[in-house]
Amino acid sequence: MKSFPSSLSHVAQFFERLPGIGQKTANRLAFYLLRMPERDLQEIADHLSNLKSRTKKCHICHNLTEEDICSICQDTKRDISLITVVEDVLDILPFETGDIYQGYYHVLHGKIDPLNHIGPEDIYIESLMARIKKNGSGIEEVILATNADMEGEATSMFIRNRLKELKETHQFSFKVTRLGYGLPIGGNVEYADYMTLRKSIENRNAYE
Ligand SMILES: [Zn+2]
Image: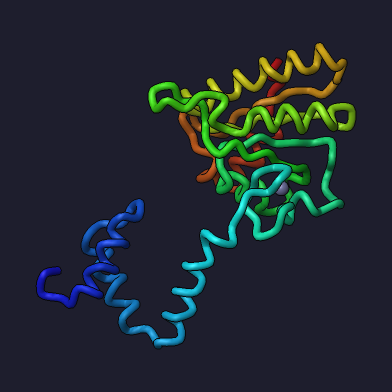
């Protein structure tokens, strides 16, 4: 983009750093923005500058929110006996499509990945244990919905063992389950379509 003004090429270079965007698309998006009305651009700029400063993690489940507690945790109509553990915030979206799930969540913000030096203490496992310790008698089921790849499986196994200890020491009686058939091996929850995830929830297996 040597022949273009630097303000335009800077924007294009930023787009190019985003996942799945190559140089051509980045240039096209930068040109598209240039043709937009000034006030729309200003609006985008305002939203972008608020993105980081206003967004925080829910104190209970670590979903993203602009308040201390996210809208899901604030929703008292949900089934308090059910917690689904997911790796990332985006994994919540397919569960919230349609009417397949009414419980609460716990977002780990990652998975145990020794090759990348991410251990259990680097993700929100301890806060899950604290949450369950506090409300354990009211919980009937913890669904482990980490992805079906190697690290996701290892993460679920680790959490399962910790939950088992917790159940024994506190005499809790909740079940631990893992999403069932439907999700392909190595499959990512975030990209699961509605039918696949519904099947996967219906066919969840005891995981103890
Ligand atoms: Zn929450």
